[in-house]
Length: 398
Image 1: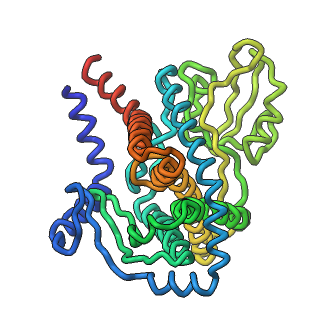
Image 2 (image 1 turned 30 degrees about the vertical axis):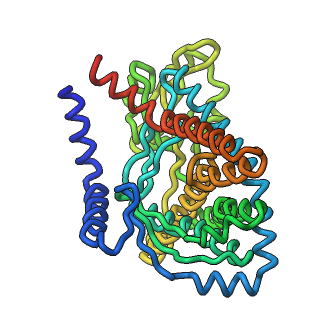
């Protein structure tokens, strides 16, 4: 138990700035709670009229486009609904059958490392990206609803604990009277727009990456880790060393190294050059392969020009690349997960509407929807918490 408490303390120290940020958010919501509508004691809604006039103007001017946009999202929405359920089921099966498996599903909290991964969404860039993604998602719901003359009563921000989101509030009584195709199109519009945003971000990335590389030149590749008692470690190579040569030939990246190394036989001696020294290594044998025992290889590049202007341009390009990368990743994830046929989220509302209009008895339709929601909720929670529960069990009982 003491090791568990020690792990929790280390976790808090590692992410102290993120915890301080989220604590400030909680305190701001608490001290301004009279301005919020509180639902289920943990969801706080702050209603505004921001963006409603813009939705009206765009819906009037491009009415046909937004109606077609919404209808196009329907097929995508139902297809993605099936895909996400299958993906969650496969992921859970892998977690339960493979001891070292890492979950492909996890809550994403900017500033805090994704559980079971070395990846952390940056606090600042992460929240800027999320704000844009959520804005696009909710605005799309609103503008497609207005294209079908469904009244939008309010827009605003919401807080689920310290986690921020956004919403648009249609006139539900009016909305429920509309034909199913209109309801489907409004529900699907948010996630469909997220998919388009992800594609757009990936296209921009294809242009930014070569621009970023134009400021730099390759200098070899770094060693992430070494296998204990294998030749590279015994020879004195260390994690972080940058390898830039093999057998007297200079190399610029891991691919060039591999082309030279692939003909090395087990037990043969090779000369490895790093930035600081040269090492003679007699490779180990493993089957038919010559093994050195290096892992986590990463190509390294340095600035061609060390001038201040060049460094600033490189840093700015790097920030743009990181921003677009997270827009792509988060937009894809949020768009797909919102189509899970679960309760009040978009996929759930699409499924509920479909059942109400295909099952003759409304009570039976709601009963079926309830069972689907419980199944999907259990599936999602197991995907998220199973690795953590297994880790805690190991800490407590072993």
